[in-house]
Length: 330
Image (cartoon, rainbow, N blue to C red; front, side, top):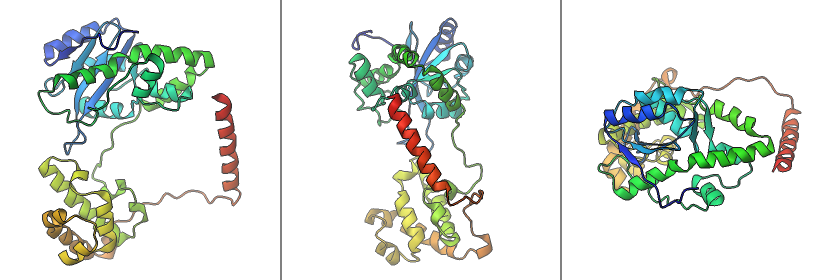
């Protein structure tokens, strides 16, 4: 295993460099990848760095400089090249959303760790356990859209991908010894199908936790508040949660304040938030209260078969059997 302090990486910030790197992937059996995004800092999140590593190369691709990553698409899609990621769900969604990249032949090292019974499956914990390598995660929530990026942040990013090939090989040997390789492949194949959620003109409240418990009138208020928050967040280019929190909007939807004084009494907002957004929030409530009953949103309910009273007992029995089998497999 390479010493964690002795490694180098290439920054790819032009189309010509990207095309040259893509040519080197032709004969590779493994490609490791990771990414950094800016969901904590902007209204629309985006991939800000794409780190890729092979046994021969370690690169950091800057998508803010190189907008067209199409030279990489064929290699991510090929079935004869293993793509190694750790906790790949978010990465798969983001790469497809921003660059139309689809991934085949995925080996998710976090999924592998779970099937091996690891209690801690974060990359930092796994690398420490397997290779005694310590990753400093202090930059995980930093603003990766800033340019130029400090050298220590670039080095942090490079380290996330460089160890994945060695880690995957070590984990696969463990899986083979336990006869669980096919389990991981099955889960990984299913994971490659995930995609980023899109509203597609649907109600915003349908993706809001807790909305399903609201009656139509309160749901209508919530929908109005969500649009208000989204408009402000888009104008300010900030994440919606940094404008107004979900708990605040849910509380306002339930209490239905129609004046600033009533809004203050709900104690759902800080004084600063009331001063900044109070008038708009109250107007949202007033407008939603005037919506005719027939036009109010209704949270869709899934209609399923009527279950026998014996079903809960059967489910609990199956859970006990599952837990017993899980303990046997550890």
